[in-house]
Image (tube, rainbow, N blue to C red; front, side):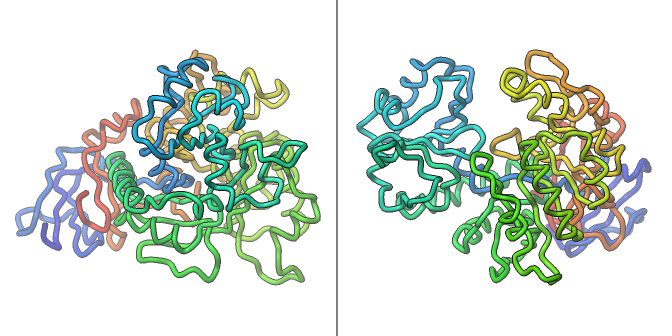
Length: 460
C-alpha cells in the first residue's frame, strides 16, 4: 500500500461518497476517483464507520486465556469432567485454567484440586477474574510470593487454602517466564479485535507495572487507553493515559474514610486525577457515589460495570457527571446464574442502560473480555434483547436500540458514551468498512458484516 488510499463508493452518514486517506488521516470526502493514482478499495455501498473502541477489557488476560484450559464450555458440566479435563491438559508443567464457576463443582481449594491432580501445579481462575484457586503443588511453587494480606486465604492453622484474591501481578514473580508466548498471544488478540472492526481499546487492568505495559505494545497498531498505570509511567506510542483505576474488593470493601482517601489522596482541594471505580454490588456503588459527593467529581470520573445500579442513584450519578461503562452481554452469558444467585431485589437493576440514559447518565458499552465476549456486535445485540441463554428477558425496558449501543462504541476513550467520532477531513484514519449499508447492519448486528479495518490509514 502507498501513503494514499481511496475508499471508493462507501456510505458515510447515510450518503454514498468516496473517501481519500493519506498519511494516517482522512483527507477528503467526495474525491474524484478518476484523479486518484494510488491504491483503491471498492466499497460497493458498504458503510464506513470510525473504528470501534471497546471501553473496558483486559488485554494480557485475553492473551493468557488463549493459552489456558477453558472450563466454561458445554463439554465440562460435572466434577468428573472437570477432573478429567485437568488430568488430560497438554504439557507437563503448569496448568492454567479459566472460566470456573461454583455451579460446576462448588468452592475449590487446594485439597479439592489435589483430589483431581496433584503431580502438576494447577491454578484455576474464577469466572469473575477476581480469584485464583491453586492445588498444593502450585501453592508450594509460589510460596515466595504469598504475603500476609487478607488476599491470601488461610485456614485456622495459618496454612494457605490455595485461594488467592486479586493476586495476578503478585504471582508473576513466582511463575515461569512465558513472555514470548504471551507476546505471540497478544498479537493474535489484536488480530481478533481488528477483525471485528475494533481499532482501539481501554485496558482496565489495575496496577499495571512497566513490564506489563511494555508487553501490551505487542497489540500494535491498536490504540490502547490504559487505566491501571502510575502517573510516572512512560507511555509507548499509540497509548494514552486514562482515569486511575480503583478496584473495590467486594469481599473486603474499604471504610468510607479509607475510600475518600483513596479517591482523593492529595486532599485539601488539590486537583486530582479522574478515577474509574470498579463497582459490581449495590453497596460498592452507594459507597463510591457518597465519597465522590464529598470530594467533588471531576471530568473523566467513571463507574466500571455498574452491575447493580438502583434507580434511586440515577439523579446523583447524572449530577456528578459520571459515566457508567457497562457490559450488557453479561445478561446473555450469565443471566440465568444471576436469576439464581442475585437477590430478587437487585435483579431488575442488573447492567441497566436505558433508564440511566433517560436520567442523563452517559453509558458506554464494553465487553470486559476475556470475562465477557469481545465481539462488539454481540454486545450491541444483547444491549437490546437483554435475554438470557434460556430466553428469559431481564428488565426489557432497560434495552437500547442498536444505533445507541453502536454509538457508544464510536465515542472517544476520553469520553465514553459521549459524542460519536465521525469520518471527516482531518480525522485519524482509524476506520471500519462494512459490507452493507448501516441501516441493514443495525437490523442484524453481526461481525460478519465487517469487511476490513484500517488503523492509522493502514489495512489490517
